Image (cartoon, rainbow, N blue to C red; front, top):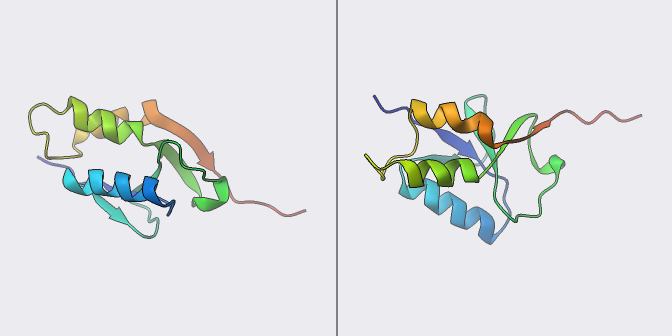
Amino acid sequence: MFLYIVFYIPECGAHYDELKELIELHGGMVVEQHECFTYQIKPEHAQLKMKDFYQGPIYICTWIKDSITKNKVNPMEIGGTKMIAKKDDNFLSECTPHVSS
């Protein structure tokens, strides 16, 4: 059974375009707004700040790239339980609400 995965990537120019294309080429989906079922991804080398993300976990894009590279059985698909199990290895940060003083 294939588990479909949805990602949110903050707009960051060419870094966004490249990662979005890679995800969609391999059967994933990128949405414009973070939802409870999406994974927030930070592209490598993108100059992003915590304010560019929504509250919740943020993962580095190597999670996606490694999953595609290691998926020898069906390289055209992104996702599945094996990919979900590897997400914590690529945890970057937790975005928390900013509290003004």
